[in-house]
Amino acid sequence: MLIGAGLSGAVVLDLGYRLRALGLLVDAPADPITAQLAAAGLGPGTACLAVSHTGATRSVVDAARLAREAGAEVLALTSYARSPLTETATLALVAGGQDLVFGLETTASRLAHLAAVDALAQTLLALRGPRAERALGLSADVTADYAY
Image (cartoon, rainbow, N blue to C red; front, side):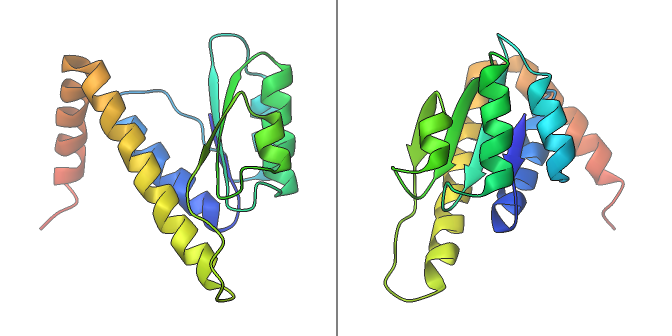
């Protein structure tokens, strides 16, 4: 399961597309209530990736907390090592940072978060091997119909 809101929601949608193209079953609800319901339904043997630049977005942290309480492994991707999200997560990946120019940190962190999820997708491609290659072939067939 993937969770994100606001600008981090775009990172989550990007990763959701990539993971589906690799043949993985992924849920990335855009609605915060649906995300919390889905998170509460996770359990042992499942994983939840929660993305939040600040690590303090209430809807993301609450859904991550529900996933953790349900027994799922929770990975946080955030720009701040100390945050409610990192306190909730099983593992935390800190990427991005605090820029001094107001507003630019969200751009820098989003780029860092996109790089991190791209690396995750590439790692999963390598780990899944032929299964992922077959899924990518199916994905290419589906998307070919949308090109001129």
